[in-house]
Image 1 (cartoon, one colour):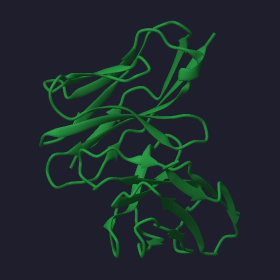
Image 2 (tube, one colour):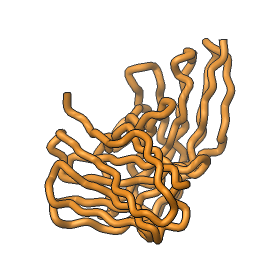
Image 3 (tube, helix red, strand yellow):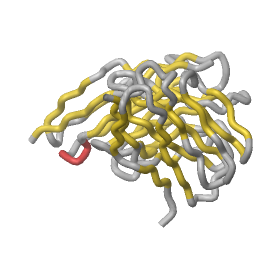
Length: 114
Length: 114
């Protein structure tokens, strides 16, 4: 079974500053990794995912995440945040075995201030 | 527009009453899921279904029941046996239920038991 640890529960950041959200996972098999974003009082939306190939994956709105197998990490970064990036971010992992289940971290709340 | 509909957005019930949360999707997805979200705990899987007329328990199924009579619909009943039902409930679907699939989420139902 897989599990996910998001190391920061709250990340305050000023507009146009960089942000990094940390995610570590544990799994005994190959994994697929996801970042989802949740805006206030809404459902979750996929931000980006790693399935295979290049370890650096990017989203259309400037976020990127790097899969690091040796450190079992999938940290999310953005070089310059906007007020509209204020949201809760969830890291999630599923396995390449027949385990269809998606395991979520506890979430990181990002608050962007002007 | 294709998507997932959850109704109602807010639901209030008295303790001891069963309540059913609606989830409908028009994405032609085979798999559907119910999650419960509590502050600081991420999402926890209640039930999932990979095909019509079949469903499986997730990590926290006690006190909940589901049915999957149609591909488009996956209602969740919160029974009086659920000890702490007040939470935000999210329904999701994915194309086939494979571990590589992106899950698409509805807007959620916030249930408050008085």
